[in-house]
Length: 238
Picture 1: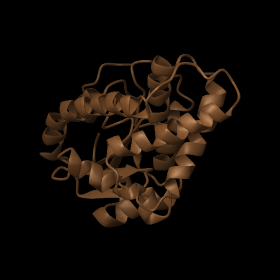
Picture 2: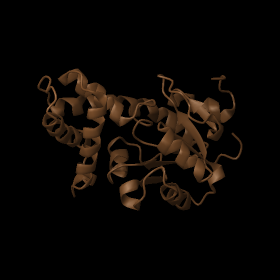
Picture 3: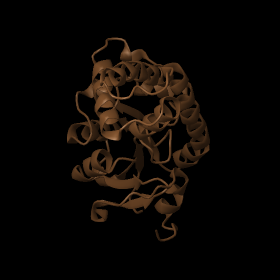
């Protein structure tokens, strides 16, 4: 890609996984422990758990493990209150352990890639989070790679709103068309980046989701490791 000077990444589902967002991973882990849960009911309860932890003053100080543990603690209460089949007893801490271990493995795998990209591009993160994006980057030894770590809670704007992307562009002092944004959610990441003029690269994942609108994309990858080839124009046709 010509004129690319910076690459900004989503965190959850992108740096810590190849295109599998937090909600889908949480559903998988909880079902493994508890037994199958009706998806619509699960995601409704999960959204309520996300909203609840966002109101707690200390959430922004939590590690990734601590955050998913707290999410699952509230999720367990909500699922048990639904009146549906309760399933097997499950421990939120065990779910958080497995979730974090997978995330850590993927982040460690991606560190050499970030090191390589940093040689030619400025790097940053834009994340819908609870104020703890920079803390997570510090926990996983990522801060040396990133010039900016923009968190929705701290800037008062969440993807796909334009403001959160514009904050990152202002901090980097770069025009949008010089920046690639890589993320796993088409609605939040791709549409948000596109509307401010960034070059959206969709980390679709190996499950190969249907693309809602390929015309807005600068690229499409199944794994983060495919990004250098895309940037260099040597990526095999999807």
